[in-house]
Image (cartoon, rainbow, N blue to C red):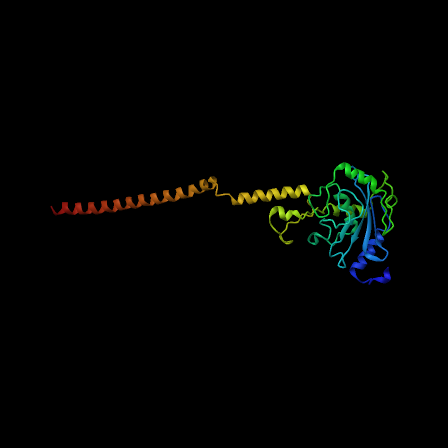
Amino acid sequence: MEGQYNLRNPAVKRLMKEAQELKDPTEQYHAQPLEDNLFEWHFTVRGPPDSDFDGGVYHGRIVLPPEYPMKPPSIILLTPNGRFEVGKKICLSISGHHPETWQPSWSIRTALLAIIGFMPTKGEGAIGSLDYTPDERKALAKKSQDFNCENCGSRMRTALLPCTASSIPSLADVEAKELAKQISFKTDGDDARTGTQESPQSRPNTTSLSPRQRRTQQQRRAQQQQQARRPVSPSYTQVRRPANTNQIGSTVLIVVLTLALAALIFRRIYMSHEYRFDYEL
């Protein structure tokens, strides 16, 4: 495969490096490019424990753009699972549906762990998402072990290492899981529900928010908008009244002082005229 591609190309160099790092399957995931196409990978992930997908082994495709890692990959599930549609690009903030949230520091390993982490979450109407019942998902999880991929030859029963209680995650897995926690599930209905179309620059960063946190954030925004539309409250008027009272009091004081001064002047003039009159007599 090395002779087919320009090894100086950043995308080729990056994918060659990741293929080497992911060549050995783990208990949780495995991914490798096709023999004749470095930009199409096939992956296998194990369903998260203590969920409806526990015991399931799921297979899919990752299609990478020539600009990778500057642009995100597209992710397609091939095994029926009850969470993502089969054969359709799924909508995640780490997928090609939302390039504005993609970060070049993410990798194929990060995407695999993100898929595992998002499987127990709700679809919420996102592209490529399903909300099957728990019983249906558990039935599909058992059936998934019989799936075999015709394109890459992977067999789900042997694609991953068997789970053991003493397994210790590698440093790369720990780092990738920390990155995966920052990835949020993105639904196309978010902008429609708020009635606005936000640009990537004006949209707040939600990469680290869960669906529940995003809903809470939207409720807070709605409350702030309602408060902004409310008329001036009586408390504001009450705060402003003392200033008006002080102005009236100052005006009255000036008038009183002016009148007192005028009376004093008038008295002095009267007394001077009275003294002059007495002197003439």
